[in-house]
Image (cartoon, rainbow, N blue to C red):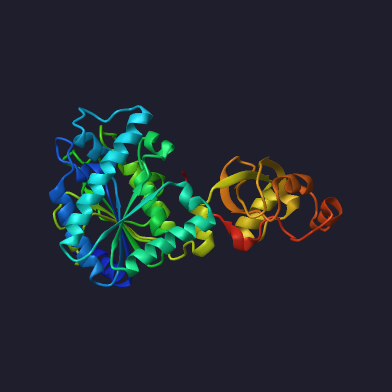
Length: 389
């Protein structure tokens, strides 16, 4: 990186830091465990110390922490992470106690407390749950505590069985609850590289403006015995956070004072810069967290009207309906090419949409006996930039 680009990189980082009001830090299992699989208490203590320094600046500070299963494996003296669901659920519950206890001990030394928040993906899929989680995290911050968020592995069956990326995506979704957020993903790799990190010719990439197919092609995920994480999951989380307008940094969690360096404006890790336009408010929930209840298949005219002209979805552009959904549920939109290009809140129930599909709006009342809405999905409740699961 030449001097000009380096100076530009540092200027962008410092501007982002100045604008940040909330910080979400995610730390992975491989950072939090020693070589023999035990919870690294010194690492937890150093992270807690830096979290307190961030909170002391007046920024809301949230930690999304992996490590419950790894801590449980070490506590029970198991040779490796088991694969059966029953054991994973029990080990996660046992390990979580040690994990939150370590954070509480370290934070308490610095005048703060750890607030345990266990979530599953479903907690954020309902709009009411999404808002309740945000309110709870705000309340924790107002009391001067630091929320320590983790996937509720003892009950989140699908998350335990997933191979990678769960807490990375969870961290991006938690960040999506707030505005003016910086997401920091700490891993055992210092940055995104243009080749395999172990190859001597590979160089770190200091800044990314678009997580496109070319960027995704750079990663080579490997799953360890104790971790579900991987660079692919972190890139997807970065893309999701960027769609919310949140800058993201992927950096080394094994560096003792990495958070201090980030907030000093140093060129740490890889910075993912969000676009100027991003999802806000309810659209953010629709696009990233909400449960999808059904699918609408549209003709090309409807796709063009929505994508090119910012129009609402009318019944006449719908060719087929799949799934059972109610008024106000989120549905995905599929074009003639079979690809999902958006999501939105349906104004009608699935059986009503099936009856009026392909019909002009003026016929809705004649078909259904009522017409509370001119459109099936209003443009204000449509989201076009969807980050894949």
